[in-house]
Length: 253
Image (cartoon, rainbow, N blue to C red):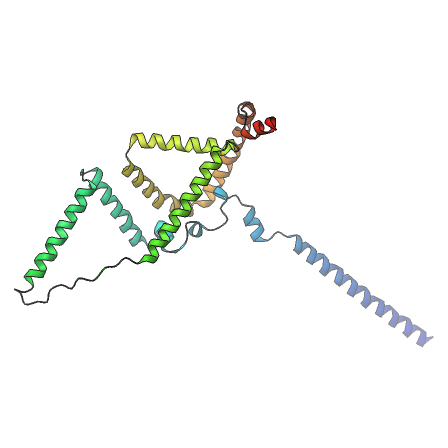
């Protein structure tokens, strides 16, 4: 009887261990399942609305490197020098009434006069004349700039062709509205002032957006929702009644 009791006790202990292992596996698998269903930080960040569908930091969107550092005021001294220089040039032309050809001629006269006098005066003061370095423009950067300009121009021509084909009415209206806004600015100020305003905005808006991007993105999301609602109403009442090129092709076919 004692041996039978011991065997029964051992059987119960073995069953208890097996049940404990099974329970432990079930609990670990359930924990792993819940961990799999937990949304990661990257997925949550990807669902956050970003202005213009931006998926990269502002620094990378601006191209990275030193130009982006200047626009985002990473080095405040260099950014201030660039903005101050452009402001000084704008003031020379717009405030003091200088013309481009006159300014270039005056700068060349001043530079050549100082160098000429310095070269001739060095013989009287027993000093060596100034050594002028030989300046050569390398072909590589010029070819790269020409290639980039040709790429941009070709893309612009392709976009104009696509818009003129009459297939995308939404893009056509957006381009017309943008050109109309630019025409208003052009009638109120000249090209140099418009360029200066664009330059100042380029040096202020990105850094302000980077600083307050969460607030701006939230406001932009609300604005885009409202714009889409208004566009749907406008499309139902107006655009749906306008014949488009594709519809004409279908009728002819």
